[in-house]
Length: 226
Image (cartoon, rainbow, N blue to C red; front, side):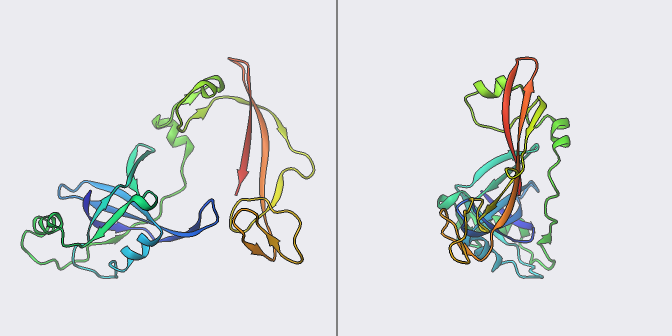
């Protein structure tokens, strides 16, 4: 897929489930017909692209992405890099890039700033998703028997919350969600990512029991507050 970078969010630092530090950057790509799509890249690709996105750039920044994963969320399609298989070509000497730039500019030099700052996505709204019908609403029985993975809303009533004195929080590693036990000396050591720190982070959760009265199924759900 080929397109011009016309918008960007601020890059963000994050930690993977394996405790590895990485970066994420979302940009907006536009084709010659003014169609736009969000594109999210991770890791080294972020630094690679940022080197070409200096403030006030007036030349079009054209990229070619290969082996990116397409996702559809909340009625919108976007693409993102997928592990080490994805490739990003920036302002390369590819014939397709040269033709794209020529058709984009029509032989005239560019004189205006072409990449705008895009605000980061606002918090996801579950109510909006339900109204749009972007994700199906299922009973507990339907979720238990389905064979395909995918997001779903479950219609059920909370009948009990399993929270006693000390089981609604735990001490975790500061780099990943893994639970850490008593400190070794004056430091906590994570058995999952091998990170050590002088203090642990608190993570909160509760176990709820939900009931689907139509099919008489009980379901246990664990809610985490990170």
